[in-house]
Structures are given as structure tokens and as C-alpha cells.
Length: 138
Image (cartoon, rainbow, N blue to C red; front, side, top):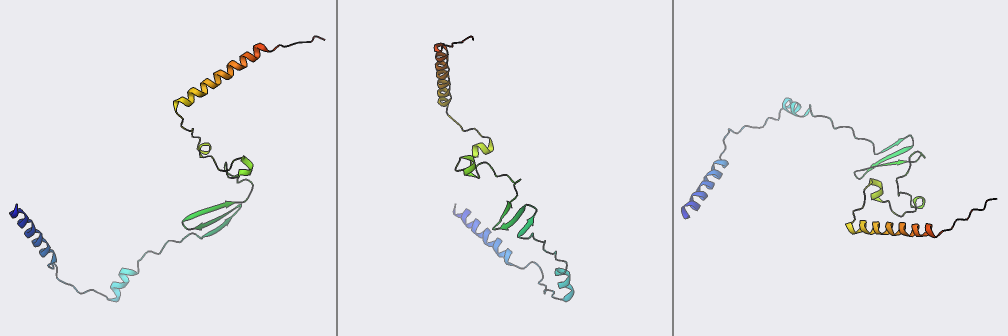
């Protein structure tokens, strides 16, 4: 075991020693005008950025803090469901209504609904039987 550790350390020392030797002949950097022009003259121009504020027909668009805000001020830009609580009688938008998702419920909820609907049908049937309809032929 000692020889394995010694061999591993000697191997790592040899690898790091060979990595430190210069393998290529050192060349002086070329700072001539032609070389600098060749390197930096063909640099691509930065792309044009979109303006932060744009005004279009019926809409103003503002880009700030990585977010693009579009504000439509004409009547054909209808609000989303729940965005006007005074109109929809809600305080917050309902995400389940917006996405058409049904709320998960346990099996007993379905049983309770079935029991309630059967009870309502029974009450309605009793009321129908007990009602007396009088027709006055005149």
C-alpha cells in the first residue's frame, strides 16, 4: 500500500514537472499595424437594440428591467377575466377559470354531490305529488 501511494505521488510530480516546461519556442508578440488591423478591423458591429419606448396605434410599449410592458388604451383591448374586480364581482382572477382546469377533489366529494342531488330530486318529486292543480274552465 505504501508503494502504491509513493508511486502515485511520484507520477503526479512528474506530470506537473513536464507541464511546466515550455514545449514551444517563445515568440515575441507582433504588434505591427498590419497585424492589429487584421485582428480588430473586421470585428462585427454590435446589433441595433430596440428602443425602450414605442408608441403604436392604440398601444404603448415600454421595455424596462428585462420586461416588456404593452399597454393598450383603445376599447378593443378587452381586459382579462378578473382584471377588473368591480366588473366581475371577484377580487382576484381565478386561474382555474382562466386555464379551464378543474379543481381536484377527493372521491367523497363526488359521493356527497350525488347524495345531495338525489335528495333534491326526492324532495322535488314529493312536492310535485303533493301539489294540487286546479283548472277553472271558463
